[in-house]
Each structure stands twice: as structure tokens, then as C-alpha cells.
Image 1: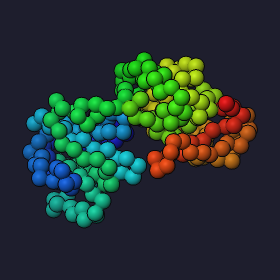
Image 2: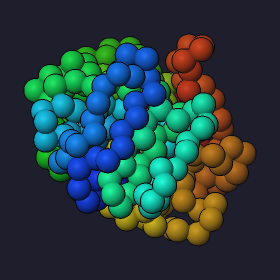
Image 3: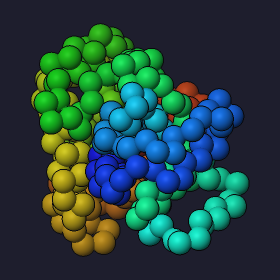
Amino acid sequence: MLRTARRLTQALADGPLVRAELRWPSVAGANLVGAQALETVSHGKHLLTRFDDGRTLHTHLRMEGTYQIRRTLPQPQRWPQHTVRVVLATSRWTCVGISLGMVDLVATTQESSVIGHLGPDLMADDVDVATAAANLRAQGDRAIGEVLLDQRVAAGIGTIYTAETLWLHRINPWLPASEVPDPENVMSTAAQIMRCSADAPSITATGDPRPGRGTHTYGRANQPCRRCGTPIREGRLGQPPSDRVTYWCPRCQAR
């Protein structure tokens, strides 16, 4: 998400908006034409595009969403897809949000109304590891894998980095959060590998950029553990319909 924020910041810095479409019922009548985008920042999986008129566009990609950035054409390009939710264009670049899960327009001073419920952003330059760790400890008997996916505890960790972080620390995904021996270290590891991936996309969780070698456990069900050779297992964290996939080594990460 940090990479997306950086791309949007760069593309929209070219000048004021010459086209702005918000195809979302609650903000469909809003007019952003003429506003200058100052920056787009990420908080976990949320994106905040701030404008010079004191407003912020809040969007969330969820699982399927994406932003496409293309050259602005002399004749306005049509985006007929029913999945298009946002179109923001300067005279040079057009940014299109497709299959977005959230679209809000709020005063920049009121951004807390859309992200105030989230935990510390692990992708932040000054990440608050202490608060993230305290939030983790407060989860009691909840499975640590489920806790790491809870954006209210710490924002930004998804299924890939949950699985990878737990493997690095030899922690079983179903270990109660209260039994995790060093929450600060766990959160620091998650923040570090996520940040490295954002800063240099070629850097993987394993450090190996070759296809199929970028993770220790994620997506490797029934393949040998890179540490001990035991076949990696696949399971589900949480309760349906909001359960999430996870991967672990039954030997390295035994209960």
C-alpha cells in the first residue's frame, strides 16, 4: 500500500485536477476539479489523498482493488467498467481506482473519523512498536495469527507477512497472544520485512527474488520447510465468513 501511495503522490503532483469522478453513492456529487493533490499517504491498507482545499479522499483497496495510472489523453478517456470507483486526472496523468472497497471524502482535520479505529501503522517511518505490542498483549487468548491480522491491533499486516513473521519467530499461528514471549520483537520483525518490500519490491521475505522462492511458508502448502524440511501445512484463522488462510511448519512452529 505504501508503494501505491507513493505512485499516486507522484502522478497527482503534476497540477490541479482537470477531471474528478467519484463513483460511490455517498460522495457522487462531490466536485474536486481544480483542487491540487498535496500527497497520498497510507495507514495500513487505507489510502488518504489530501488536497489543498482542506479535503481528504479516503479509499481502501480491500482484496481486489487497484489503482491504474495512465497518460491523460487529449480527448477524455472513457472508463465504462462497472468496477471503476474513482477517476482523478491532471493534465498529464490519470489515476483510476478499480474495485475499491471504500470511498469517503472528509475534512483533512477529520481523518480520524475514517482511520481512528486502527492500530499503529507498521509501515510508518516512526512506527510505534510499543503501542502495537501492548495492543497484542491485550488480546488474551486469541490466536496470535488472528491477532496480527486484526487492523485494530496494528495496521498493515496481511496474510503473507503474518505467516512469514510467525515462521521467523517459530511461533504457532494458534498460540494465545498472551503467551507470545516477545511481542515487541514480533511487531518489529513484521514492520521490517514489510518496509523492505515496499522500499525495494525485488526484496522478498526470504531475500531470494527468484520465482517461487520469495516466501518461507506462505503459498507453500505441502512443500518442504526451508529450515527443517517438514512439509508446510495450510489452515484457516478466525471464524467464517471472515476467516483467513495461513501457513506454518508443524515442526518449527509446534505448540
